[in-house]
Image 1 (cartoon, rainbow, N blue to C red):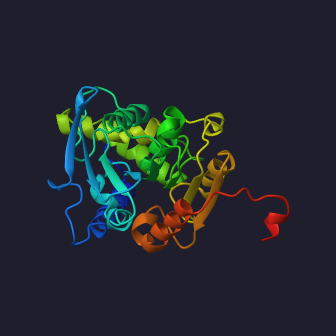
Image 2 (image 1 turned 60 degrees about the vertical axis):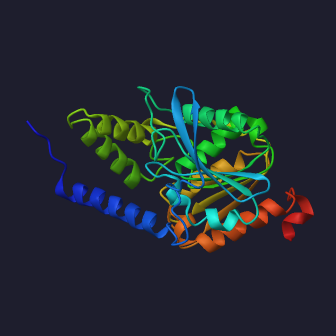
Image 3 (image 1 turned 180 degrees about the vertical axis):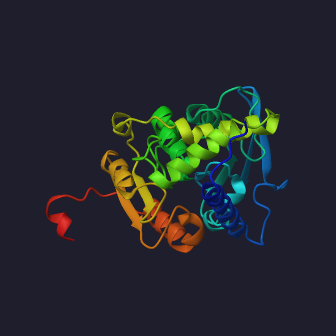
Length: 287
């Protein structure tokens, strides 16, 4: 017997997909084909697959990590801005964009170990990092697993530590759960395998502990929308457990802060990157 999603839930999922596509379209400025640029694109043969990345600008290295189901193109509002000041390295994570995944599994740990291999191949350490959504999770885990690569500063928006109705809003968690179950009913194809791997990332991962956050020693700007798919209380919890962190909750904003609040997002992060971190305590809390 074929089991169908309730019409209301199916419509909600369709709406979510449409909103995601709209946001992605708005990230693509007319000035460049980010995510499919032969002049800037490179492949690294590493760890059994080919990792795709693009580089722009000169200066200190700055890594850009995209979100679930997206690609370098989704960071199209950040690349032209930050490439004026940094050597931007934007990466299609494993199973996304132009980076395929020949493995039978996919984890955030695999993804950040891929990034580490890329940085080793480029002889880079002490990078700046910007992550969005799953890219924020990548940023956290890169700083935890490979702290030598994130000695400068990192900023991320819309990240979660675990996958339940405290790490995601109940509405979004249930959308992911329903879509994941729906994918498992479909005939197996290579494309479906890739979709399931990406879906499983957000259904069952990440699994980051508060103790692991205590291991992060680079100054960190933790960002979230005040109406994000990540509960504000969860974003606050992340900031509270990173030793050197600032917290920015963006008003009148959902999950796509780098798109719909791109100017404030870019300038706020640049200000954070270019000013020394200061510990605010005691009398300084009155300032």
